[in-house]
Image (cartoon, rainbow, N blue to C red):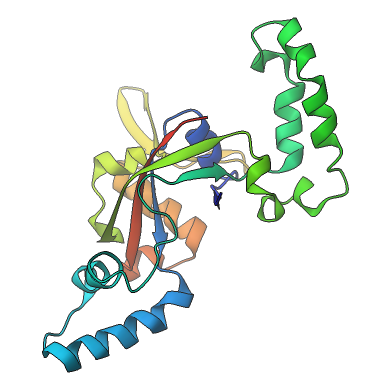
Length: 218
């Protein structure tokens, strides 16, 4: 089983678990870019048809299956989570229907406590997908330019919304700084979020991305 990481700092991990985030957009893997460019040249030499952009990615990944997508429709994917975070969930009585249910999880708590000295205890990059308690199922995969995202899909990316003094705002919470970002539209909020996650200039560069729609199944 594969795993997928979502930002805890900006609340995206919790948004997935709460069912508010059902979309994610990921950059084309660097390891694939050179292969895609080589395919583009070979395709032109064979057909004299110059593919580019979304059409190129669809031909490479979908039509000729030259490359393997990181995740495909139907995949069950583990939501990466630090072992200490899983232990916190298991120790919180509010996550169980009754004290008897909480007591029954004693063995699981001992299991994850055993990862105390494992690098995955504090870093989700090192966790085993099979140990993750939460999973999502990939429902749809497509390609698009980052700026093609709609306001509706920005909300599906986990952008929050609220009303204050009669005005509607959109944004996300920065857990490190303890502040909300406030924006007039979901796209403005998402553009800011992407800049914080992927680096300054990411939104303006408008890269091609792989977009995934998913549902939480566990």
